[in-house]
Length: 453
Image (cartoon, rainbow, N blue to C red):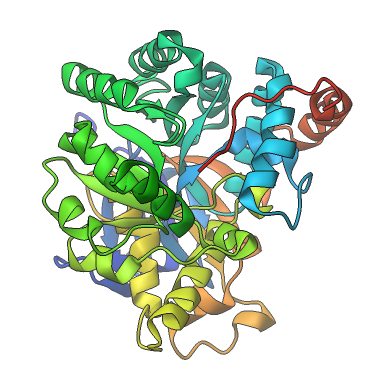
């Protein structure tokens, strides 16, 4: 790009001297040494190697000793639930929900959600997450925090059938109101909670709304094998088959967890008219003693599996870096095969497959010309990452989220050299702390829902 008269226009951002993680035409991960990444208008213009001379830029980042990667994507979380981190530990899911979480959540205000979301966004930016998919309550507050923080997000207002038609209507209103907000960084979805809290009539009505308004759906389903067995005993169908018979699988659907997906579900998912994806959050499954998401079987039928954390109330962390490592390790154990998942496969799930899972496979997930400039720089000079014999293995199994030095979304630097630039973290922590006693009070005996699967 040049000014009138032929003088080159400075780029908005140039990152130089780094090693860049790139993908070939088949989506396989590779690395470009001594790379320069040029960004204009929030879009990657070029990724070149060999230490070529860099163009002038408004902002320059020296990436020597660092790896540039596509920003990580948290494909399923409840960001405001960081406020409940550690309040209910070492419990089975039914007790965790009924006696603790759903009782506390009956106290939630929009301000609690806002502060929790802001704290979560700070944690994710620090951990190299540039996009997250959220499924929660008071989502107007979350959308406002996303706009303020500079992150990218895929948001849905959750609802239960116990809320009546108004819950579904609010989910639709939110999705239509915020679709394309924050300069296009926000995408939206309809968000029925799960087949065990949303009845068939509501799920079918949601499918009609998805068709009429061109909206995807984000839903918990087959979260664990016990849910699948209970659904079969009570209704004669699996939760995945419930999604099929109510028409949801005719549309784009992001299924959270799926550790209860069984063999009979695979052809249903494979043949679904819509684009189906699954989000896996292995740390929470280990805590709840659930089995793993059947990643290998899903990949074999062409269903992308994105990486996730779930809410920090259940797994204590929004660390997608840890999810990447755990996905690789848990799958090796589950399959009894050390060759699955490899480090390069884990990187693929963390980048391109996660982008596909949230419906942004053509916009983010790789460092390539025309993609949005969602980039993180990872410092590999620490003793725990040296020496580097296999760069992919170092990134997956040795590096940590704290090694992320810089986080960029849409070409805007949100964190540089570990310094947050868009969120006042101390003020957020202090204000949230003042509100915690009222939020955690369970003496009223209420709960927002009943967990009975």
